[in-house]
Amino acid sequence: MGNFTALGLRLAAYMLVSLFIGMTLREYARARVVAVLGDPTPRLWGRISFRPSHWFDPFGSGFVPVLIAILWTVLRLMMPAAYAKPAPIDPTYLRRGPRDVIVASVVGPLVSLILAIAAGLIVRAGAPGDEALLVVTTFAYTNASLFVFHLLPIPGLDGGRLVTLLLPVHARETFRNADRYLPLFVLVVLFVLLSVLLEFVQLITGAICEAASGTDCLFLLTSG
Image 1 (cartoon, rainbow, N blue to C red):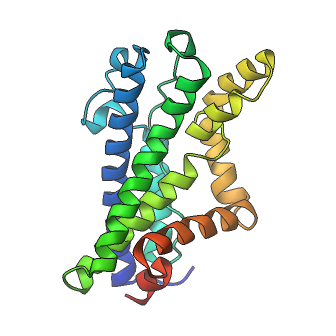
Image 2: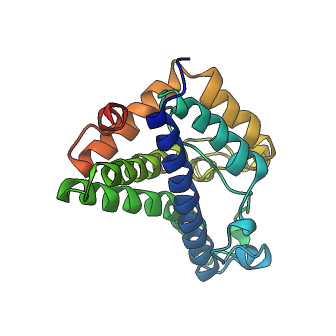
């Protein structure tokens, strides 16, 4: 596992703050767009708000990020991941059916991608100071990770909602109801399939961050 380092502790803190900001913005944007599309669920759940208490999930927004942050303190930079308290989309309210489901499912990841690109451009332009460079690079990498993570075909995540559009009616309902097991799915993906799936997902995350920033984000972070 290695030893705790001052660099690792700082990076873990920057990563957690980046997750907090990234999740707040993506959840607000997603809730706002779903409401505009005609689904009152976000409003009924109180999700059209910048207040984190409205989306914070003890396991997905607390336990999982903290567990990943512990690994970051010893410079094992596992891809940052977090998810909000489930707020299911009710397709019966959406005016244009499958098209609106696709829009509602991609808006959250799209916000994460925009944040990653914006931070990456700041890195390209040259952040003012070495510590600021670490902060901005961590923000870029964290939001690139959120983009990839939420597109995974896991029930309860945005990628899972896209998968339901490809399934027969009965299978679609079963898959959608499986979102109650989201914590289990996340643990399996992050910690059981660590050497197979996660390595591939981290590769994509790193490629997005590098394309946005023009530098190898993980190398920059670990080199301090």
